[in-house]
Length: 256
Image 1 (cartoon, one colour):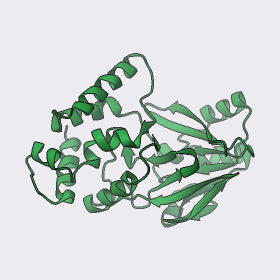
Image 2 (image 1 turned 60 degrees about the horizontal axis):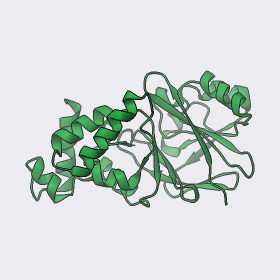
Image 3 (image 1 turned 135 degrees about the horizontal axis):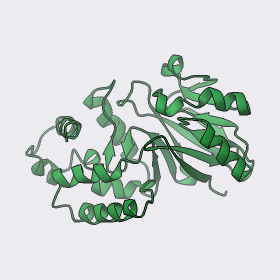
Image 4 (image 1 turned 90 degrees about the vertical axis):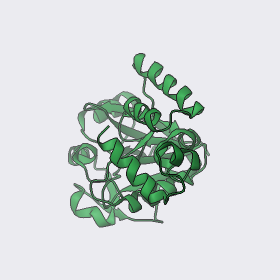
């Protein structure tokens, strides 16, 4: 089966909206459309017809374009059942373990709350792609606006268990600043040092650093490594509970 055709659209200051199209049927989803006009322009340019909106969470910079896109295309809006009251225009409510068909492609819904209470990711195993919103970033993770460190750590561990070749499509281009923090807490990680240089080169060239590969995140993202002995030693918490180590990392990043 051919994989999803995916295009990313930079919007606002640092957001990404994604278009994901099933080449067999033409079914097409916009993931986290912050604003509608750039999405409509891209759809027209590509000749694609929008059939779905996949929402990862309720923040306005992820759902702000929902209603305009629905009016323009008649698309179906999908979001977390527990957060339905905060997702404009929602038609289909999903939660952990549900599946969403996008033509011949099927996404598995993962509850990855922590950044918000009702945050989900859409994993398309047949296309080696996961749309993770603001739970996991390239070299980072989302702030804990509504969840606890324990909730976020569970969510990150869930994403960490996906196949290493999964492409991680996150909601923002934060990678360069995330790399600076990662180097501050994990300076002896040779893979991280090399990756940070690649990130700097990409940004100097005006290129995106997203998507990233999950295998690369496992090796270099400190927020996926709160249970790693070397990182725990580096932050001064050897042998500590991973949730406590994660909470410390997140608190440090909040004030970095």
